[in-house]
Amino acid sequence: MLDILETSALAAGQAILEIYRAGPAVTYKADASPVTDADHRAERIILADLAAAFPDIPIVAEEEVAAGRVPDIAGKRFFLVDPLDGTKEFVERNSHFTVNIGLVENGAPVVGVVYAPALGLIYSAAAGMAKKAVVEDGQVTGEWTTIGCRRCGDRPMALTSRWHNSPETISFLTDQGISDHEAVGSSLKFCLLAEGIADIYPRFSRTMEWDTAAGDAILRSAGGETLTMAGNPLGYGKRNQSDDSDFANPWFISRGKA
Image (cartoon, rainbow, N blue to C red; front, side, top):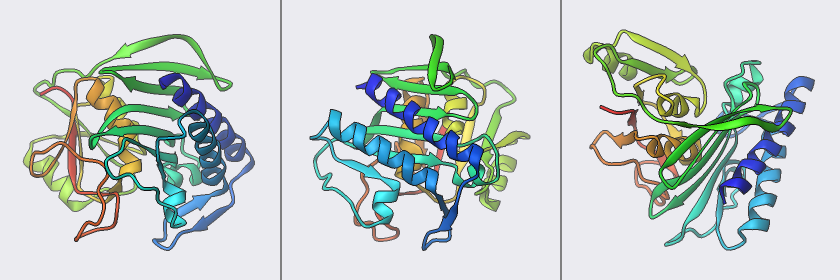
């Protein structure tokens, strides 16, 4: 499965890069978030690949959900797809955007691929092992490298959202005595935790499951964790929530090794 997900993410990423270089056409969804022709083109590629290879596994994809097309996932494992995570980064010509493909089983992300096409990096994880590789011209070059979270020292490094930071996040960092922090876009924050470059990612603003599943799978496979404010592992497949829409996440804290 992982080979197919990696190949699909690479193909989607190449399509995104073509539009990135040419200049995207931007529209806005009902929630005022931007969407581009790259989002739609990449999602079509991934949906076709996954449907052909895994016809019995439902796919929950960001733009499909926005269009009102949501498959039945009750009691099933399912894919979560964000074809272009970090659309604002993409529109602003920043390189911190990714292609995210995650597989959820029993409410937990167990397989994930995150490809950052403008950075030429791909991360993937399955069966409790996380890895990273360099990409050139849409192909992995060289060997995959196994990655893992580092043990947090006396001076932890935090990651925050570039576009969706919040006063609560700043208060948390202050309360924890964390002075070193960097704003990073998209699911790259999970990947940087997973490869031991940073230690903690507090997210006290809204995210959706397709934003987090792939990166979260990589982080967990690398020895890290993502916990809600109640201290429980962040769950996936959330439907009929009384306080938010389907697939919306609560606030969470992702971290490497304590």
